[in-house]
Image (cartoon, rainbow, N blue to C red; front, side):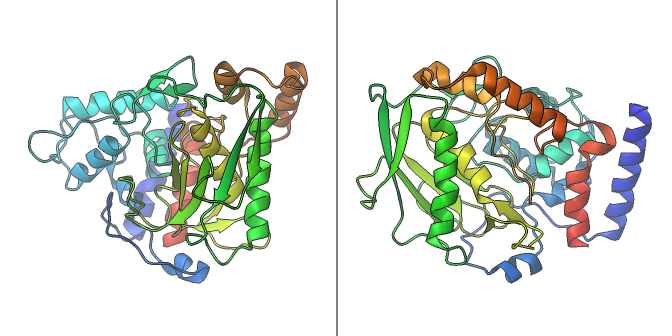
Length: 360
């Protein structure tokens, strides 16, 4: 049955490729300018969509543009920069990187660019690296992971971290009340499981966590790449920088925001706060700390993997009840299949198919 689904999936992608224009992937583009929601919808997003043409490519093949895919793997910590330029050959080093990527992200480990892997590669995601090969350095523990050295905020428990919004780098199509509410809810989810509270302050420069929306190369060595692609990034303790890509169409209500490329602000905020606290990316696809999020998807509820990881750093909130949390998680699993749920075959290809249909 799975083999049949994979065959159908591959055929569907082939037909879509014939009917859709091909765009080259771009990894580190020039700084972008602000765009409205309407302009974002009208703009063809070529960030990683062009990688779909590498579906079913295997070791030994040479395909024009594969060097750009290797840059993607370098960006997220799976490939080191070679002495010369990246080539377009699917070589042994790239296959090893691909296997590491599949393992780290909880995908079927095939060593090939199968539909599950291509779908994951083309899905928008957090800009922080996944592996110890990056300059950030991660140390894996169980499914969750920490930054190298396991940094944490050194305040004694119970602690309060302050946060502030940039006075000059914000978006104007959401009100400050809407932005504040999304972040309040995101911070509250983490505060519910650890002995830490979060307080908004007005003094941006002195705040522990400093939040802003930025375009392109904004001076921190981690440039944004336009619509979709990298959505946001935040740095490990006690850095406090929390940056979101201003080119995205950020949403707090999908009923009101109709953009096909809209990104849920609260979901991304919840994920990046995990980085601020010291968590790196999880290999559990249901977890908030999993690195990717599809357009118009909402993923805000912490999973047990998120909770165990952050509590290992800070301890448990005295009011946190593990049994109640597990019951709530099980109820959520039964009632719906979340955007982070592991999928295979035809089902796993849907996010990529949707992105193709948006642009055709």
